[in-house]
Length: 450
Ligand SMILES: [Zn+2]
Image (cartoon, rainbow, N blue to C red; front, side, top):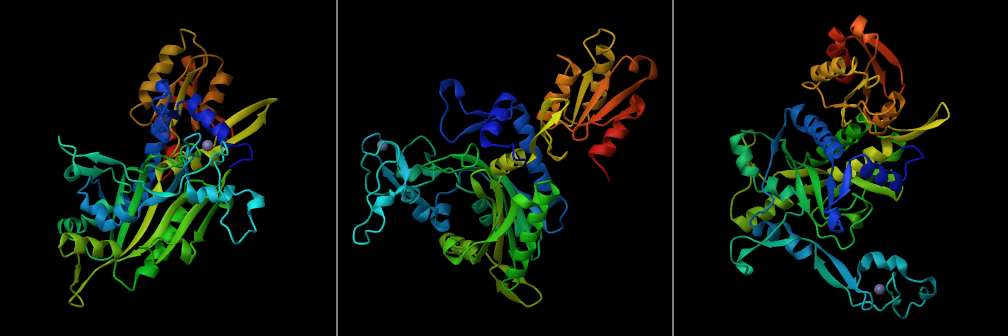
């Protein structure tokens, strides 16, 4: 990330250029929900595709899954979410705003410290009003399945995709004839009724997860944990995140979730500080054990070599697409001086860039537009492209730079005689002349080097 990137600039860019809009904006929006615009959906899909390629397609020990968002509610009893997935919440009696009690602890006025005998009085950070006693607030969204709204029809929008993989353990093991170690990967929406969503798309109420549950023989779990920490760290570096703004941190014992034996976080240095992009937890046999207990099914693996039944341990690399989206945007944003003008640029990795190639006739001249459209038609089957003939060529290059398009192809008057076009590269602004007959091959070499 360049020093120029601020959250405000990225929010503004996202809205202005069609990456992210506030959900239901014409009605005043709704807190913690966002809509991904035409360029946003491309970037998001490219992040997911890059992840899937690395963790499913290129591996011999991973398979994919797409489980339902609404599951049998007993799943959440077994997972612990019904009983423990809650934050302490306080309400302001004056302005009615709601806060997380644990976050308000930072707002204690300095004068209140040092009186060990009495607990400091925390007041509303907005209006100074009196607060209610903390109440535990479950973060799961509740709904009803079927026509009757009663206790028997209550269901939940999943707060994580992980449980869909645990409850399908036997299905996948049997149908895919897997041996340990093996894993499942899943990408999907999850929902948490956060008391205080914030930092743009960093903490949403509806978000998308990319999760892996990797099943291993107990005793090999620590080794596989290290393997996944290294793999996942490398993935971010390969996609161009600045090494100096990326770190792997091992959580302290008191930070661990109740199910975890050990957890590492991949963290990115956002303007608001080091924040989690991905958690990589050793969940032991907690989940399979709990689901076996609550379902009455046997969720074990039969080891033919030793003749033993084992409950596998699980390594879980779990990341949030929306957070990664924000990190990649912040990290790639840059501003530089070009001939006395400021050029804003997204130096996105080409695999992530929403548009790979923009086709630009030098002007709207009637001789140039038809061959430019022919070139556009030639490229569309291969990559996401844009055609732009509005305003000066310089302005159009800047527009493409600002949304991270790696290559622009320009059709000029020479094209009419030499049947060649200019490819202009985003970062270096270097230009090369290429015959139209070789254009697809030339771009392929740049975008998909072997
Ligand atoms: Zn208040």
